[in-house]
Figure 1: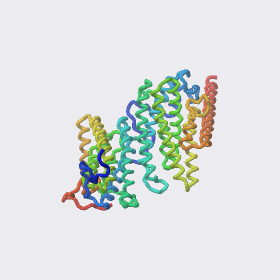
Figure 2: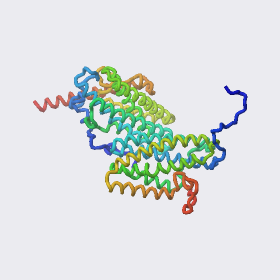
Figure 3: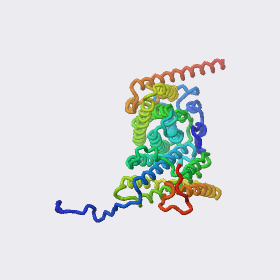
Figure 4: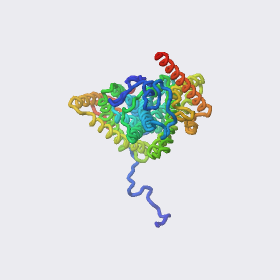
Length: 220
Length: 281
């Protein structure tokens, strides 16, 4: 056995974590507040839709996914006070009005014959955007100072990838005609345009740089 | 998407058959008479028609789990987070989302168990009386109706099916019912805890909620289908109910309600029989 008194480097050679990160404490809290708002709106919608979809496999999947996003919102809710936000409700808000509009349109489909629209909004528009924003955050925050956020992001991302795959496979299984392909595409396009205006789930800068065409974040 | 969805809008595929509660309990395969009075007995393998009764009960569990899933989901959607009387705490919504996951698993389990017992979806009819408990616009009353009355009934039913699985030597049935029973104890405990917390400063609201629960519990007793009497097909699972936060007095009250429901069902049956005899005469 090696000499226990022999000095060792504080970081093992394979541990490449670094101190610098892109986000301040305040910026992180703001993003986390947006994440919590989005996860809440999503789990509420999935829970509400369960009773409106006749397809049994979809019904049961939505029930399962509903909890995962509720759990993510709880992770973010608990992280806020650790980021010096002692009133978590204050930052639990959408990044801008476009994001509010996005959820309004996302939750419009209600009829039993609109399962494709319901799934497309979540699994072809929202969840890919969440994966993108979470991944950007994961890859740019300080791997040492912000380790708790990283852990939550990794846990959430694992669910997002699984749910995205589930949802996409359900959509592929449900779409059987050209007309249904067009319906799915039309709803996706409508929502993508609103999401573009929102700038992503954390607003402009969800993926770092803000496009020149995009105005500054509009507070709600 | 609107708030407060009525039961007749619950979405189902073409296999499901929707009937009202009277039509459902009049199904002769359940061992009941046409007026709903029990003519069967405790669910045991030697009871006449036991396989059909067990399959009917399992199909009832399956559709009940779907409605429980839908009820928990609608509670996530119908109420805003806040401190107002129409609002709910954030943590309560998280609990309802958790319940969604649990109920979705129960749907998966019970549809597989139904197959295992030789039943197809839609072979027995569905009534929406369970979901009706999840339609109250007052969140405290809804929670009490769903998490104390409906989920309490689930405790009794799962315990009965677990015992039936043990008696008939079906380890798969016994194993699955035991897992679902664990979840239901959790759900009832959630309901007991939230009822206490949300009404701590509002005894009048607590009284209303418990009164609503009594009404629902009496309805769910199904004319003596669930109760403490020896020949009740589904017995009150007293030990598990106590684990879930029911007091002995509360369980005794449900037992009394079940006896009342049974006596009323018998009176209806007798009245119907007398009426039929008078017509024939």
